[in-house]
Length: 251
Image 1 (cartoon, rainbow, N blue to C red):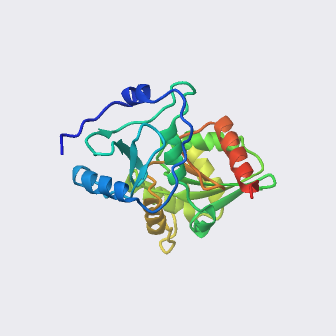
Image 2 (cartoon, helix red, strand yellow; image 1 turned 135 degrees about the vertical axis):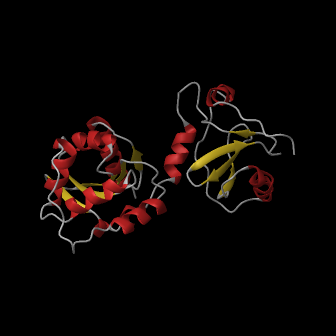
Image 3 (tube, rainbow, N blue to C red; image 1 turned 90 degrees about the horizontal axis):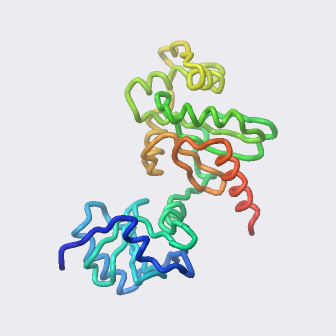
């Protein structure tokens, strides 16, 4: 095999035709050609390849490793590490695909490991993974204050420091977890020290986050299973809540 060449996302985007008919990559058993591409590529990547799928554009093959995607040609001579973008519409096909493969079954979340806040009628539902020492989580929490008619399930995902574990435990062990969390995240007011016998579900939430491949905080999950990493503002949150509600109504 020749040396694998890597191209920037911009170079790859410019190579894409201005009009591409489809983005969806069907999830089917690998063909013989896809299996061959897998065998050729695997020795040259560190992570285990989860799937190889021929795409509808440029004869490329999608190579998926967890939530990460790279592309290669049929002979696996080149690997393209970047996003495929429609230069005419600016639609990012790679991002859309990553969102698709990172979806979860919301109903499978163990909500007993989170605390719940109901605002208004609470009909819309989200789950949020946050670290108490995460600045972006505090920005997200400000955005969440402006939402109405939503139920927020907050998982205390302590990944930044050992101090996060202690802060979260104190908050989890208070009579009013929602108030204690908002006091800390919005006003910097620490909760009272937890009683010695009180335990928080730190280990379980940490294992859950790793299973869901949550690599940073905050991360928001919507009712349709889609995820949104980072400190989104209220406008973006409302858009995603509306989209999730629309997806739920589809047969």
